[in-house]
Length: 378
Image (cartoon, rainbow, N blue to C red):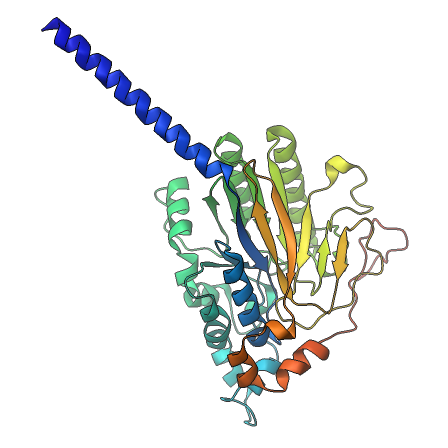
């Protein structure tokens, strides 16, 4: 009897060891490969033409998801692509009619081309053009704010938290993706600051989290594009600088990687915080501005400081390739007129050429105030 018990115990221990080895092997296999995601923002004006091209590229790249950083439609004025569509070309639309259909247009013309590729949405300032409110946004995009990964993470953080918010996070294969709301001058408010700092605290103690990626509409304060960023109001500037310092402290303490992604300025810039406001390497967060999904394209800032890459008059998205150790390598994937699906070209006709050749603005965002010669008033 005793011999049988010993044998059973030995078999049990052996079984547990096998399970452990299998689990470790599975984890190693999972962490040994790379995977990718895509991100950009600002698809007003010409997004109904550009976004299907982005969707085609994202799907061809095999990205696990696309992250839209806000400003789906213009809101305050008619988008050129919508007016060129067969449904509305040559028709007189009142602005109230346009505002009634703009988000439905975004869903049908920009979201549907992604098919079964998940899309995560961040809110931009144009989503809050009057009469629209955050409550309207939550109601319209509840299905996306309640996506399985977001809902599961929210309840994992707090089983009693059943509120939908315009900000959220989810953890995917060791990467903590944090989508925040700075779409109006009163953000980040105290509630959102507390929430962000709580997410970072949990990421600090979570050994499975190797990297934090924070995505938002406006860039955090004091970037090379400060004149069109969270420097726009005192509340944004104060709270944005606090979150920037939180991210620096998190990186310093944990040695985990941190990346910051934004749009709002309609061009591409890499290393946007490597400027006069961040004098030493340890104060520079890796940051990108990628407002290249169809909006009218701005001129580049006059002083790009130490930015590694800067382009305007282009459309496209960042492809982030996650390495086994949590490093993310970003590459800009340009979408040219030749990459627009034929069905879209047929639908919009000459507007396609207009979007690529004429969709430009002379606006130049001003430099950060810490830069020599920067103006005190914007």
